[in-house]
Each structure stands twice: as C-alpha cells, then as structure tokens.
Length: 398
Image (cartoon, rainbow, N blue to C red):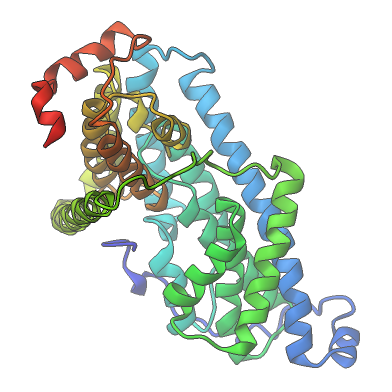
C-alpha cells in the first residue's frame, strides 16, 4: 500500500472525453465500425499489454544500467561509490520530482486508484516518463525500493494515454488504467496470475466479467513480450519444501505472527515519519532523498550492501542457506529501516520487493536457527555483523 504518498489532489481532474479536439487516430472510425466497443476494448487490451511489456523491459534495462554505471560492475563494491551513488542520485531525484515530475513521487499505487475512482481513468503520459526516469535512477543507485509499483503505474499511464487516443467512452476510460496496471505488474513480477488477482482485488476492488477478460489479456500479452526479451526463468529458485513433523506448523504460525508484527512496525513507522517529513520546510525536500541515500550508503559500507536496491539476488541466496540466521535477522531489520527512509523522503519506488526481502530474511532465519553455520566466504568488513549478533548456541533452539 502506498502509505503517505503524494497528495492525490495535486493533479487537476480532467475528463478524457474532453480531448475531442485531438487529431483523429488513423483508421479509428473503421475499427469502431468493425468492432463493438466491448470487443474493441478486448483487442485494445492486447496492445496495452504489448506496450506495457516493452516499457517494463526498458525499465529493467535502465535500472541495470544505472546500477552498473553508478555502483560498478564488480562483485566487491567500493565504499566511495556505495556512499556517493545514492546520495548524489537523491539530489537529482529531488530536483526532478519537485520541478519536473511532481506526480512521480511515491510508489504510484494511490495515484492509479485515484485515476480509477476520481479522474475517470486519466493519468498523464508525463507521469509514466517521470516515474521511469526517477525510479530507475533511485533503484539503480541503491535506494531501498522495488520496481513493481512503478511498473504498475507506467503500464496504467500508457493505457490511459492509448485510451484517450482511441477516444473510448467514459465508462471504458475508467477501467483502462487497471488493465495497464495489470500488464505492468505482470511483466515486473513475471507472474500474470498474481498480477491479475492483485489488480482486481486491490485496484478495482470488485470482480466483473467485463473487466476480467481485458485484465487477463493485457497481463498475458505483457508476459509474452517480457519473456521474449528477458527469458522465462522465475525470479527466485524456490527450494523444495517438505514437512517432516506436524509440529513444524507451529513454527510456521509463529513465523506468521512475527511477520505480521514486522508489517505493523513498518506501516506505523512509514505513517509517523512521512507526516514529520511533510511538516518540514519545503527547502528540506531537496535534501531528504539525499540524506536517506547517505544513511543507506553508510549501512552498506559498514557491512550490509544487501539492503541496497530491490535485493532479488539476496532473496535467492537466503532461500538456499547462504547466510547465518543472525545475519539474516539483521538484514530484515535493516531493510525495514532503509525502506522507510527511502519511501518517506519522497523517492519514487515500490514497496513489493522490500516486503518480499523482509519476509524472505525472516523465513530463512527461522529455518537456519537449527542449522546455524559460519559463512566462510564473507568479506572481513561484514564479519562484525555476525559477531555483534552472535548469541549462545542454546538461543538457537528457543
């Protein structure tokens, strides 16, 4: 959920049907004569998925390019880059958000829902451009955010622009943003079914046969495009899980409670800190993303570079027992802190990847408590983390 994001009233409400003065799309009258509007909407959903898939592929490439250019391509990151990259990127992002792309602030979830319920499906195309640039720069430089929410808003914005160009009716325009959102989220997650369910439950809020077909078509078409360029491999190599004893269900229940408490702490912290940051003088907004980036860079230099960016590769490593349970628990706590700092500072980016990271670290830590082993290959600057949180062996069996 995009807690405390930018004000929804910052953009004037616009009626997409008022743009009748725009030039006629070539062949539009012929398409309308061949297809009824409901069938035309289904065909349009396929093209929305294709364009959203291409946009998300470019977005992923942009994130990787910024990461290589700012942080370097080596396995060992230099301390100077770890500190300067997110800090200087924060200054650039603040200037862009405050002066060029004001609607790019936050994750984009609330803005997409506002387009559906308040603005009749209208999302400026400029928002997609701004979210693309600022979120790619933020995530690539190491801010603790993810690409999923920005991909959702980029897809919704492209769908809104295409719907206006095709001069859809007001009712169809209100539903076109979720269609694009599903396409963007499906391409970001490489999971079309999850994207469809999420958009219908979270964005639309109700099940209707008319919108379900369009959402499914856009999600599937975007996945086809994404896999054409990036391959069909899943994000994570989930190991086989086998329940050997029934009382393991108790451990899973306790883990769920711990995860719920972590989510409450995270949401409460975001709400509290966001209100305080908004209450500060406007000139401080130029430095809030940079300060968040500086703190994240210092944490990375002190031994936890895993908290930077989305952290997909470290989620995969955690699921395959690459870290001790103490270090995993610390990573979960640090990820909550760094994500709160990045998000409340107004840095564009998503919350899905950080929450997945926290959950994966907590789950892997719970699994490793009984099979705690030393990580022989850890660099020297990371060893003090394990020393600081090392406890007697008996604590591992609590």
